[in-house]
Image (cartoon, rainbow, N blue to C red; front, side, top):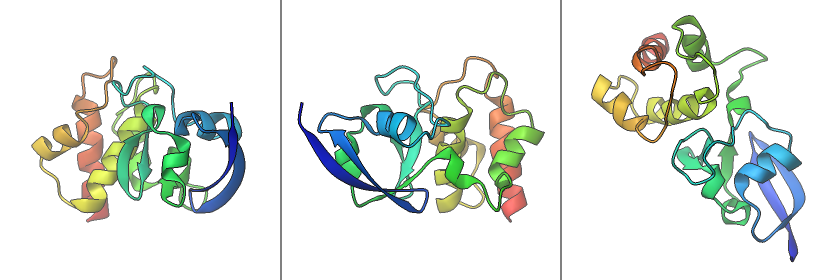
Amino acid sequence: MSKRLLCLNVNGRDHDLAATDSALLLEVLRNKLALTGTKQGCDGGECGACTVLVDGEPRLSCITLAASVEGRRIETIEGLVEGGRMSALQQAFHEKLGTQCGFCTPGMVMAAEALLRRESDPSETEIREALSGNLCRCTGYVKIIESVQAAAEARA
C-alpha cells in the first residue's frame, strides 16, 4: 500500500502526517491525531456518529478519504471548546440532558453546530432536518432538539 504525506488543518492547526491513499478521515483523526471524540459507529455513513465539519459543512468521516480533505478546514468536537470550556452548544446538551449514553453526541453536536452557524434561529423542523443523518438509540430526540433550541437562544 502506498503512503503519502498529507497536510491537514484540524481544529485550526496544521498537521503533517503519512497516510495510505485509502486512509479514511475517521482513522486519521482517531489513530494518528488522537482526536477520539469523533466516534466510529456504523462504518458505512448511516449513523452520523463520525460527523465532523469540513469547511463548515457536516461530513461523515467514516466514508471520507483523508486525502480528499487536504487543504480544507476540518473541525472535530474537540475544536468547539472555547478557552478550555464547553461551547454554548455543548453546554446546552449537558444542561438540557441531550445526551444519555453519549455515543452519538459528538456527531449530533457537530451537525447542530453547522446548522446554527447558517441559521441563528432554526425552527424545530429545520433542527430535525439538520440532524436527520444522525441516529440516537437512547433519547428519542426530544432532549436533543431542546438542547439545540436552548443553544440557539443562548447565542441570540
